[in-house]
Image (cartoon, rainbow, N blue to C red; front, side):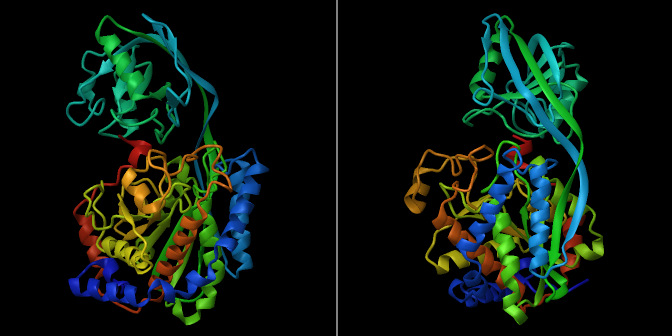
Length: 503
């Protein structure tokens, strides 16, 4: 058992939460020394270095490729220059790449060839194959858990056919596993009604047959044809899967209680499609500059701060999960909380704060006690500057997932990815309604200029101010380890990995 200096983090009493809220307000944004020290100009210098690394290495910094290896070295070298003794935690993962664009076509009764990226996408870890076969809709009404989520959905499925499955209800991998067990030669997982674009996500591990994800319009049209006389599809994929290395980079402040650690994290990789200077070069650059400047706080660092740069996040949150899985329980109990900073500079931004208390009802995992207080700390920071915020759900799409499922409180901020800005948000934050928060999300144009400088500056300040707040907290509450033990005893289910893995 240990003491946690972050009373409201652990949510063990209303009085504790009130004290922590008062502490947060007392250390308001204008009084954050770290926010003054971590400047936009310095953070942008790190982003430019990351852009140069990507440009010199095939245009990306993806895990398992040279750009990421050099990024890891860059992070470790910078930390050493700042006086740290970083640990590079290597781990292996299933590297996957699409060698040539996939083919997806209807061959009968009305021949039509679909366009990659516009009409369909290849799911990560799809196998290679060249299949021409009749297509069979699988539970097109999406009854029960969801289309293809139960073995019974495949009753009467003809072995060798292509499975037509609607997205939603369970992991993509569950749908694929059930289809393979039923004898499918390929799997087509089409988009949900009302959701834009094709299905883009991961199966988490390599598969032996083709798996593609068309738009809802394409998928529902194929289902109708299959139900009204039949439809034949051609699915061809050319992919490679093999074991490769990725790494986390971890560094602790020399000052602060080592039994009450504040973990701050960002991921060090990009997707293969682009350099990832917003996703998540923005978080990486911010944390690097914060690591440089935090020494100047001196005795204000009462709790050890652990800077974590997670590897292979884009492959399925692998680095952060590896870290937590390999952290002995005694060391887990020393982690007071985790702050996640993934995408802080989206050009059509909203100031999103993770919904720690689930007041919006959108979380798909029970969050540990204390997450609501982390949310409050960020909201208090922004409200002190008369800046609006919107809540965003804990949907498992970033590296906080491994922590909250291990019973460790977590929180953070986010400026938005592929979802569309609403007219109401445009009135509050500016920008353009009807356009994605980051139109360059997971694409080649996520470069150095893919940043809203005003929004980024505000998010940098919030990152630094709230980190300083928790690093400097003197509040103590007993029973943190017991609270976690109780939460885990309730068998809290792991978070689904958002739209990346499910739905």
